[in-house]
Every structure is written in C-alpha cells, then in structure tokens.
Amino acid sequence: MGRIPTAELNRWLGTIKKNQPASSKGGKPLKTFYVVQYEQGPPRFKVMVNSRALVNKPYAYYVENRLREEYELWGIPLIIEFEGKEVRYS
Image (cartoon, rainbow, N blue to C red; front, top):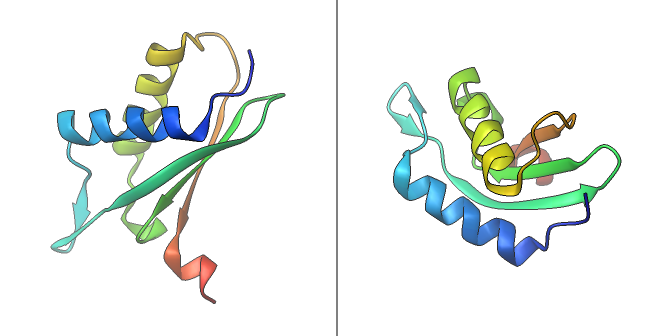
C-alpha cells in the first residue's frame, strides 16, 4: 500500500460527510476539517476535527470502514487519530 495524496483523501472526506453527517453531543456538532496520511507502515491517518470529545465510536468506525472500502485496505491494520483544534492551540 502506498501513500494516499492528501487532496484525494480530502475529496473522499467530503463525500462521506455528505452521505453521513457527523455526530453531535449536547447540541454541538462535530465538524471534520481535513484528513492526512502521515505514515505508511502501518498506515496512519489524522482527521482534524473541531473537538475530539465530540467523536463517538460509531462515527470513528464509520470513517474507518469507508476508508477501508474506498482504498481496499481490508486486512491491513490502520491507525486513525482524531485531533481536535483544542490540541493545536494549547
């Protein structure tokens, strides 16, 4: 498996956001900004969101399964990290 370009991953993220809106907690919606692959063995992805606390397991599994489906990553261990803005600006 090679590296997936960031632009392609972000187009993919845009399509899954249309098909399945992100979850919300306490009335505050989860916003996904972009996704990047930053390692290859095993593939590691970082999804930037407005708040890590808003990411629930079903949505994380949804993202993982769509990623596996789109890029035929079945049977390959994936690491997907959700990072919130609060981490970047602290």
